[in-house]
Image (cartoon, rainbow, N blue to C red; front, side):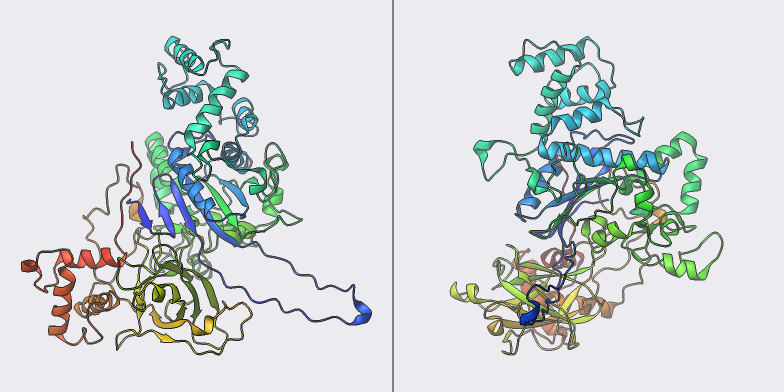
Length: 616
């Protein structure tokens, strides 16, 4: 699979997913006045937990049945720091998850221990790691042992004799060299609590970046108050760290796929572990600034068992997390094609329920936070880029107010565009008209022209990453016009009535490319998903009229040509020639719609996948 990058919104690498959540609209709180004889009377309002960002530290950082953080996680903590710094004052909480192998209580402990490993590093709490090293709690297979020390020493530049847990003479010498480099000649080169504390401290520092806001302070770390519960407990309290066992699978294998792995014995077991990688994850959520932990937190610690989790299940929670379709995987955030949604025992009602998009999580509480989160691959949103004069001049830091839909009660989403001129809007309907009002004052002050709308779409990662597209209103070229001064919304920006207005038709953008041939690779992947054939999504053939419309839409939104491109062949070729001059010499700017031009259209429009691999 290829890694993907969506500027300013979502970043995915082999280490994890790091994302801002799409802006959410909130209804205003209407407060009725009280009477003079009831001055002490109050209306009670329950504040919901609103997530603003997330990070999914994928299983790339953990070995199977282990909570030890591998060296690969270093890249992830650098990206996590950058994400958290975007939201000062937003508290976080950490959820650990396990795959379906094993029993529920064991995986409850394992998933919590993985979350604790991340928690201990973020706060530099050495005793948390010492506990994970010394005590296996309810997951006896999670043994850090001497192997963890060898991995750390090797990463720190003191190679041991092996990385398999045999603490031979070379390993002891590596430990001695490490201690000497820290001026700790008095400590014996033995696996003891004081020695592990020094090794863990150096490893935690090596995994985290320098704090750019205070380089003199050294490596970045969080404070207890950065967590939802305040992190007063040494091991993390409710609201800081919790394990979800295997109750919230991101992906459920197809029945025939699971049977194939079982038939193949040990080799099949290894392939099953590889296929289940999306389920083994630590997910961090950032909540709206000022959020406090509810008085009743529904996630019990592993020491209290799984009953508290089961009490928060959907009525059909076990059905959601266990049901397998015969020949197709089920994924949270992705609808299963009905033609592929076949059960071993046919049941139409059950099939229709479980083929829907968000039906694999058993826990209602976690489901509410994960809904529409990019970190659980449940992203379905409009992603819009605004330019003030062209792609080299994004309309950055501009206030906007977007009305999604034409109904009188249509929601209004407000925010500020990113440094690349990007904004994200939650999707309510697959086809909708969006009235986008934008503050172009800063652009006007700089002498830039009024913004033209351009639509950038998150690149598609097969069927796992859902994206939707939008196009400027069909017909005439898009024109910015002053919005009518009619708003009485108390949450409106000052001067919002004077913002310029753009009208966009969400869902109107058509394809440029047809289905990928079965023998064509998706992208560089040294370790492909062994069960990918159970995850395929069939596409309809691409009609030439659809391609022509898609080309015309993108050229128009990129400010090449006007609204006649779909029906005027000469105008379309002229616009294509003008576009091609941006990446070809004049002699090759022929106006022909060849493969390179289609690729460049997608690249400039933001649809192309950007492969990004961390150094090996």
